[in-house]
Image (spheres, rainbow, N blue to C red):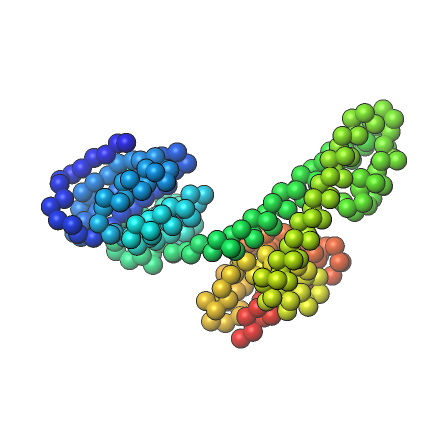
Length: 307
């Protein structure tokens, strides 16, 4: 572990620390009450190394960036009695648009912004463990859907190269309907692909049953959302888990700004804003295309935050 100390700490005072989290190693910068750098260095991004280093420090304000490691680091540092600020780097131009993008510079920037005014870091709050575990189920299902789509497209492309075409059908029925239309020259190559597509379809259905059970038993607020045409358990649960706590929004239309939901009706083929929350954008778009109708995002957010 590398460490550079400008001068020894003479008293146990509250410090401000910027911690730039890396996948293997993290960089930190410690400021005293006057804004002087009293220590900087690096340590391994592991629970053991983090706890060993920050246990010996007085209770301090620590700023980190949201990312893959921010959740467990936040929990660990809070357990050690530190005040943790989880920054949103997308809203902090000094970090995201910096021309001197290094771990050391980012750690310094985090520390100085946290010392001056934590609100400059656009603090975010991690979801609860329960919400995160439920959202993980939805993301796992999304991964299977993506894999199935890639296999279907691969098989359609292989058949098209022979001058034939597979009949149009839904992804759920593809394995059964496409099997009899595979040219003889491709049956050996297509067989394992069709088996995998059929297997993925069954696993996706199992996820759908689990998601519907979770929505009914643990998130009754999704019932109102599912009365909106085109919105099922998957879309409603994703929306609820993304917001998690609707009471933090003063008005229902504030949800549109938070998730960048379009204020007008989303029609089939309409382009959604680039900043739209990925999962909500994908689900609303797919539901709209499937039912050949439009979905009002305003109805969705009003059912959750009726104000």
